[in-house]
Amino acid sequence: MQPPERLPPQEILRAVEEHKARELRREQQQGLGRPIISTDFQGHKIVAVGSAVHWGKWKTFFDFLSDYIKSVLGSEWGNAEIAKPLNERHLIMQWYDVVCHYQQKTIPERGKVHTALMTGATAAYFGLVYNLYLLAHNVELQRKLVARLKNPDQFQGAYYETLVAAWFILSGFELTLEDESDVSESHCEFSAKSKRTGAMYSVEAKSRGPYKDHLDVGLQLAKALQKTAAHRRIVMIDVNVPDDPSRTADVWLSEVMGGLQRRESTLTVNGQAAPSAFVVATNHPYHYDLEGPIGGMAVLAGGFKMPDFGLLGRLTTVRQALETKQKYADIFALVDAIRNYRIPATFDGEVAEFAFGEAEPKWKIGERYDLQDAEPRATGVLTTATASTAEKVVYLGFQLDDGRSIIMTAPMSDAEISAYTAHPDTFFGVVRSVGRRLDDPLELFEWFYGNYRNTPREKLLEHMASWPDVEELTKLSDEELLRTYVDRVVSATLARGSC
Image (cartoon, rainbow, N blue to C red):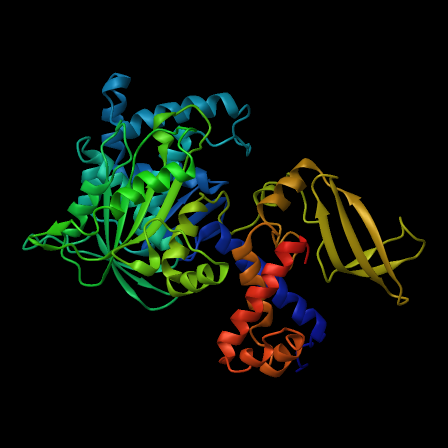
């Protein structure tokens, strides 16, 4: 029996790096919950959702969601709603009607994959279905929640609860839903355990009624804090107002968080001073303009009665911002998930443009290429690459077999530019840095901190040898020395405008 052929070490390393890139891209699309589980079989796509299995002839994940909602809400209920005049139908079915008309306008040929801009209706409708899928796949889709969604009087609050649950799942929390049959005491929506830190939180979601002429959410916070909580509290509040360009970030911060800050010393619950809580206020006004493009999403986070994570969120130094971000990593991760909330188009995390044939992944770092078009009989390995979307070209660095290095350029199609823009850090087949923004102090601080965190103390002091206060710096702990060094490097970088 012949022993299995061994792969060269460089091939093994390349396979590992390509796997890391695929997994990062999948996580960027699907978040940190359970991955989408699907396979192809005899012309059908089989998709596992929790313990249930679904199958159909779906090409995109949106195709699957279109059928999945029917299994959740029931075809009988949906058909009964469609039989009503449009303005009397449940809001879900009104969204569905707008989505259908939009698809008729934007899909010229049935059976083929087409791209269209996300509108208010598609974001609201498919967002709801995606949230329900995430709940069923990662935790449990309770019948009581589905019943509340079908009830027009309870829909708004239930819809927001699905969004909140989705955000927590995507940002890396394990959820435990409260017992819906237990009416002995009030309780929060669910408990959330962070996979990142292991910390436990009690989460309550509140949504304001529509068409308010102000941004005050004090009433929602007061109601949320009345709920019994077994763990540290996170209160999610849906501000629920239409998009208004005149409401700048400062307006949101002042009116939403400033209003809560003024209540810190006065708000009581059952005659006692109100407990502390993380507060995350959100606004996703897609349902106010069903046919227009999506926009106006907002998210603010702060700590009610938490001085080091104040509601007005103004941190005086970059270093203070990083320390706060590290201390409250779970909340920052949640905010990132809300900001980056997207519905995946593919089942496996592949870039949509590559998955559906609009473009091909031509350039992979570590792969060997025939370069005879550039130089006779030349072959070499792609060692580095970068893209310029403004120029619509890629710059490619090759190590030739004869030992020489050359740089080439190649044009980029619109589909390739779209694929690169969506996933610049994995576009060339491996995970690679695409640079840091020089106008973002916190991003620079994190980058420098990550690069220097394993630098020996002696080396840091060597870098600081010419600093006038170096004698005092030698008395600092290793961590304090590192943070001081990085803080000053960032300040110097920002001052001269280059790394």
